[in-house]
Length: 335
Image (cartoon, rainbow, N blue to C red; front, side, top):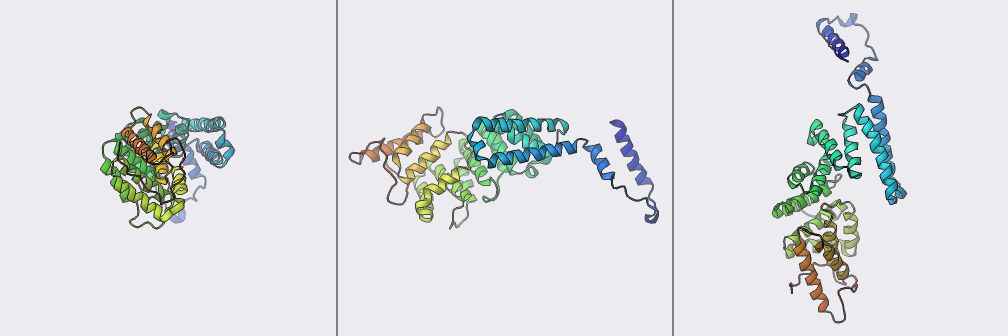
């Protein structure tokens, strides 16, 4: 290929030295752009076709609920797309679209090293800001999942933005999780609090997610009154829709570490007055070895048991149903 570059440089040099009068200039060759594109990216048409097919296939996968339900079929489907993208990557190693899609599919398939390599290459080529919050947020999530908190905080910091845009709410919650695990709970709480609008008269899913995450972090920091205020504010606006709104918002959350889903569900059930379900979730969280907030989960179990003992004929395994009063965070003394 060296002769191609020499030819290209010669042509450029010739143009720089000879500048004919516009009236005598030769007509532009309409195929010239295609020529240079083929010189720079000889496989562009094949790579573009693969990217288009990969995007279409992944889009179909998201829309096809039957495929979503069949785990084995879904894995095979994504694996096929990943194979196409690997071939495209061999043809064009620095193509941003290919790297972005390889990173996404590799992560879904559990190929963590390959996902990190592709996404970090993309961020290096474009820069973190141009790569976008989808890329930096996924990198942060992967590192958070691996327990590499410094890297998680660095990448998730690049992914922050307005809550109502893309996955920014998820990235905000994950950054707060990383900060809290890093011993920076006050920074985590400030991050979530500052991300919310000053006055909230409605709760779209991203605002619901961040608001509830703020209550979770207040609870983990043993700021019971502050956690109550957040939940009570949500309850005043949402009333009987509090549970459905929070449950729907949590569907967008990719929990890392995975046991956090127990903590979030437990606090939701407890806030709704569903003590049996809450106790089960607290126990699931507390049973995870080295869970960061294990002591808080155990304290919640003691509080629920004390609440149940105060009700004649009611046992910890009995479903109590939703509280008839507005949902609150119960603040009972630890026995």
